[in-house]
Length: 245
Image (cartoon, rainbow, N blue to C red; front, side, top):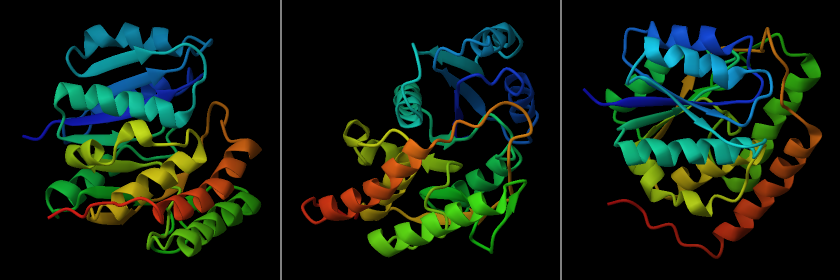
């Protein structure tokens, strides 16, 4: 059976972390979990470490000092997972905005349908977002429209952060060269996978805004994404992405 690692970056997720861990481990498919904690002062890491004896060989934690950015947390997790030999690696939030049940659907989209990347898409079949104010929905939706226009990527939800990757994808796209750390990280990862010719599928999901804890979104993250998209498009003019055979 292919091995599967879910990577969850955390910073102050005291209210959610135990519940999300237990939910993932209750799924019909077997997923391992790696928590990458950026020095949460609220005790998130301590909760994770207290649960490791209950889930030996399935629950792991990597602790980093200070907030170093979402992108660097995922890259840290990807490298850890690749070193351990995992076949599939997943990105997921800790706050239940991504339904853990959908991990199985993303996995099947790759393992059973032959895709290399599966994106949990909020906009593949309209707008499937719950509990967001209308202004944020519109900003997110039109951000993806903007990304499609500038980059040429065909994806409806280019900023989505709920994904499944075959290990081959992460080995190919040169993680050390990924430039962005925030919102634009999600765009850049899709852009690199698409430019290398990997097969990418959007899997419709319902995104529900967090019920507990505090959002980490900020204006600087959106600014990085706005200018980052232009950078990706221009840099692609001077970089060759060898297509897979």
